[in-house]
Image (cartoon, rainbow over all chains, first blue to last red; front, side):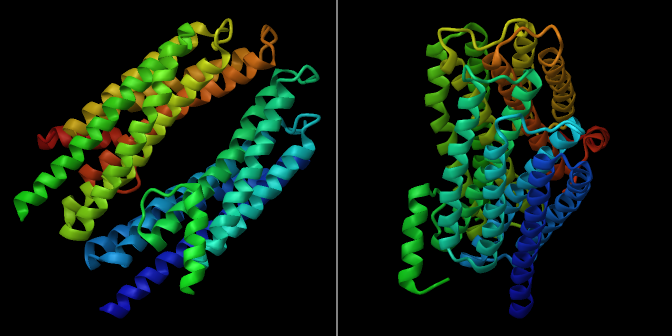
Length: 232
Length: 232
């Protein structure tokens, strides 16, 4: 029974990593489609989001099945609860990638990235892809140093998000309303993508420490603690 | 033990309703602050969001405590799992109200609602407030007809959201970049508020039926079924 149970928990973790990996593919394709006006790539992202949604639902059902049949306690319970909370965030990350792709498709064959913002959005896209890859590693290994990496990268995304608004609201901004709308929405999608990853990172800290409410500063403390204890 | 357990479940429900009621106050104040450039009202919303966040965290901890100590099964398990999923959505609704208030405060003493969009945003605000009140009723009573009401009101919000973009992207749009950005963000906040309420409504259908994946059409079916069975 215990063996079956541990297999269930490992399956849960493997599925989470699987979904996170699909999200990495999605955000990589979406940000590239957005930067290069690649409508075929955008269509792939949009079509593949259904797979991410379906896997998240299956994972949720599995988690609830474990709760119902195994009635886990202590750390095992935290694992299952974390999986439930985290799947919702990862699924939203997939949605953000889809929204970016939809914007690229909507404006095709025009560029969706407004003039003067290409460098900024390429950087935001690269950060989001790095965040997504790091998130997969965090889910795979539980090594909280990855949580810290995500937190720092999110700070960088927030800075770029602020510069988008600075540029759009400056006297130099030559963009028409369409470009302004696209910049606003696209920047928000990239920023929300990173925010969700931080939310997942905090939940992984909860898993390690049992503390439900985790501030970003507490991520760093939890990393130190994990290193001292020799866990990863 | 059973009595204590049922009290725990009732407490959970009562807390959910409490948070939903606070969100109703928040969205009502936020949309009024946004429409009338009332910075004092906006400040109240922003300050009070911390209360919503804190209550959501406490509710989550309570739900996990019930899972750990009571190991609920069947419908009781669904109640606890639903509470966990729903608290996250309601807390996000509070965030959307806060974002609307922050926009109002940011532009004060100027109006945050761009010229030509006042009627639209007042309507979106009224719909969001109605949706929030209805959500409280749904959480309080479990009557799925409220889920249907929310779904229909969300459709109306989506229509208004579309008209915001139509206006902003039309040749008549005279707004500067600031007005364009504000219209884009504000419309998205109102629309996401309603979306989250629909997500909660779907989870209440899950609670009643046990089906995890609920389409909007299935809400109507679940309402009929509940009526036929005489439950509410």
